[in-house]
Length: 338
Ligand code: FES
Ligand SMILES: [Fe+2]
Image (cartoon, rainbow, N blue to C red; front, top):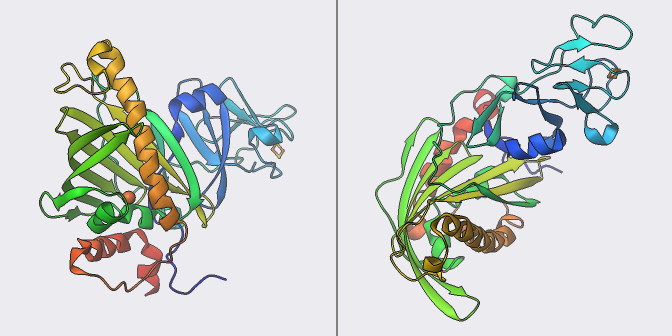
């Protein structure tokens, strides 16, 4: 039974679904997202389409497991062969002209660096803000991904970006301090902090990281962290993307890319012996593996915790109160109800 004080499961916002490469390779993908069944495909012009997975004709599931397929950029229903284009319109059927009002429900998408985000609006309303672009360039390696699935909520996972005490206690960071105030502006929240950390490599080497991180949060599903590692002078971009599945579990996707390191300031795992173009991808995999360990530390807390509407905070908690007030805008249903 739903507890009265639980967070509503689907806050309004942009949520990561998949990346363009995966859609192109698989042609048609089916997913459960925000408690709905959806399908994702790419039309002949490269438009990514995200639609309700049930056919408006007689309700067949359109996903590949039911037999749905993509032909000439159109989604073809497995039941009677109706074809839908990138606008969701039925453009052909095998035996008769397409019914003029046969149309799939489509979701608004946004692509950033090949990552596909989909808008979830209160009562289906259109996007209330835009996700800013993150320009790519030849000096950034391609984005690597790691995906996790566990019981959780995107507000709870994003809360860690202002929860300074957990960085010390759960992850063992040191010298953690904010680099300025947490700022909010509409659906945007900016948080900057510094930390140091000792990493052990294969239990033999110790490596000290001295890090400045700037976290840009655009709604609770999208956290983008710009990381400057000062010891080896490395720039890294990390996305932490929480996507509700069914109201109980979420996907948490880490996406990461490293800027090419031309002159490593310090000996770092034999980096200097690698050709420059290999350094960033190798480090990217290393960073993803490390971040995966961080998520594992968080996950056992996230997946068992219970949301406290009135937490008893201490002085070392940072801006959790501010964060929670900022989050209220993502539940317009509560505002209209209260
Ligand atoms: S149910 Fe899709 S074409 Fe009939
Ligand atoms: Fe964490």
